Amino acid sequence: MIPAGLINDRIERIARDIVHELVLQNNVGIVVLCVLKGGYKFFADLLDKIKQLNRNSEESVPLAIDFIRLQSYKNDKSQGEIQVIGGDRLENLKGKCVLVVEDIIDTGRTMIKLKELLAKHEPECVKVASLLVKRSSRSTGYRPDFTGFEIPDEFVVGYALDYNEHFRDLSHICVISESGKKKYAV
Ligand code: 5GP
Image (cartoon, rainbow, N blue to C red; front, side, top):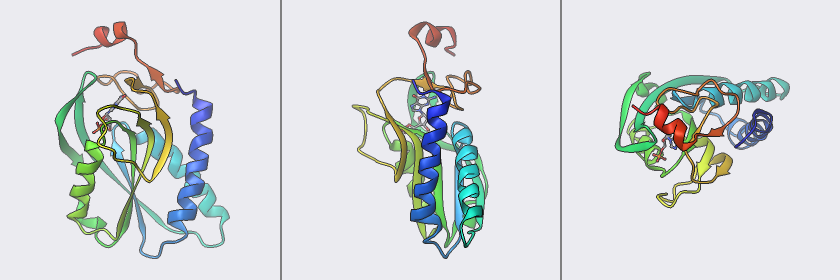
């Protein structure tokens, strides 16, 4: 669906937007929060590009990084409940500006829940960057602050997105076929 080169170019653009809108305006400290596991490629590539821009600007802004692990999917179906199954101590976010880095927004429920959870720890601000946003009839209407691509309502894999832990290693974002879904179902 989206080749690696295009992903790379788009991330460069998002990094610029983030630096202008968030990093350079900031005086409370930024924590870039990676949502595992699917967000790790986007997080690593985005952070590299933000760091490059940061290095070339007059004032460089220190960025802290943090991780959270959530789980909501089995096969290609959301389980409804979102579970936090690992991560750092969220107490560290108090008074900071948090940039959440997520792989994909489908219904938006995960991000709404995560934002509720983060708010309990009193960050100064929370912004969300999602590489993908699905045009889904199940959408809650939630929109992230920074979006890579809007995609059709298909289950996608690759670039760290998985289907039951398969296909995270693909460089491109791909649509899994019906036969692939059956073959790798659990
Ligand atoms: P939401 O709560 O917005 O419905 O779902 C968000 C989460 O569902 C994402 O973080 C991701 O883990 C998973 N998800 C939604 N759509 C897809 C998809 O097409 N492919 C993969 N691999 N995961 C998805």
